[in-house]
Length: 122
Length: 478
Image (cartoon, rainbow over the protein chains, first blue to last red):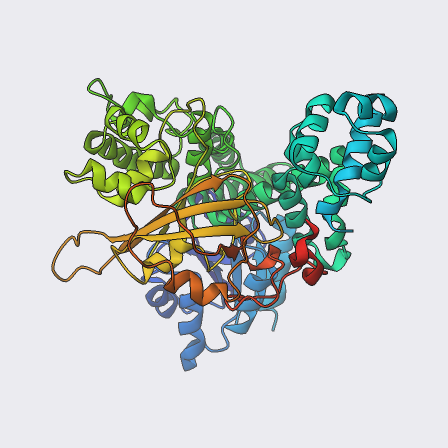
């Protein structure tokens, strides 16, 4: 069975491109675009992995990640953080609050795909 | 050798530059060549009529010979030294440097000023990058679109078979995203262009900081805004259209509008004609307290100080400086005055009467000032702090202070106050005497700010001076 990825991204054309890349590689991809209801979407879909944009409408990706790490059910859920802010301090912040991987926009498709494969490997 | 003792060297340099023989100059001013030789080797002091005659023959201001390089130039060099104290610039030799190599000295001072301006601009832009929501939104928008374009283009160019429907969809996305990118980039360029216009001041403003831009604009008009004077005055908004140097950037426009509204209100309360008439009767600028009393009729001292600083240039009238601060001591307005350095960034000298006035609202403060390191440059300063009318009963109490600085002529040396910190606040607090009454107290030595002030023992010092040979400097090297 295909592994399920939940992509939380509010930019529709980025989301569409990522969905295509991952789908073609055999992943099942769901898209969610609102920060406030992201936790509900994760709970409902129980994905194998989350790709999380940082600057989302209504709620920051970092706040969502903190809640994921605070909940026993999602404490070890692999999370790849996507952000336009690529400074060292941003990377350190993401790692400190529990991101498994940190990718800066704009990214290479191959880099994203490789990270997803690694994070969903058994 | 103290700078004041190098008058002879300056005479010699100037004479040689003009290719005048020593004997010729001596004959022209009525002294023997041997005596002139002693003067030129700094072995005889010179002053009075002989100095005036020699200066006239050499075609220079006597002060240039007696004081050396311009005060502003020396202050500029001191500022440059303060910037990089580890460089070990010889503070005691600053006057000599300015005198012997005026061109290089000007270059250093101008570069220092340029660096200060650029640093201010960098700080402003950094602040804008961090806090300007418009810029942050634009940058995020651009990065998002670029990300979408890169990913989509990566898919299309990977050389793999793509379903026709997906291919069409991605091509449409590329088209939409490229349009969005163009629009966002264009909007960003327009936004930055507007900032640049303000930064350039359109006609010479030195930086994009609202206060700097306004002061540069005013400097081009000698701080006199004729359009806001008299019965035919225009509205302040008329000077701030979007095409004007101060009107292009919202922050600069808002700052300028606040100032110009205040200017027009001042002009209505105290028209230039009325002030000029009173000044003609008074004959001098050195007693604005008496001037305010003479004007009467709702004219307060702060208004008189501000309006004097707005007078159009006139022959025979001394230039003035004006400084305003808020209750925190932050300088909110500066009209520069040669020889009285005003720090562009960072705190000013705590001994300025401006700050003493803050502790005694509505009490006029008058003080003779002597700039540290420049024994002959003296000024008289009048200051007053005025509380702002509260907006409501529970609104915070706000206060601001205004200080007018007027240069004094060359005088017989007087002993500066030994403890200027306390003296400035206490002895200056007495209300001003009557019209034209002389101000006889010893001058208070002040500086631009601690970093470039040579007075080691100053009770108001908040940080060490970066002038190395401070003692020698204070002793009169400059």
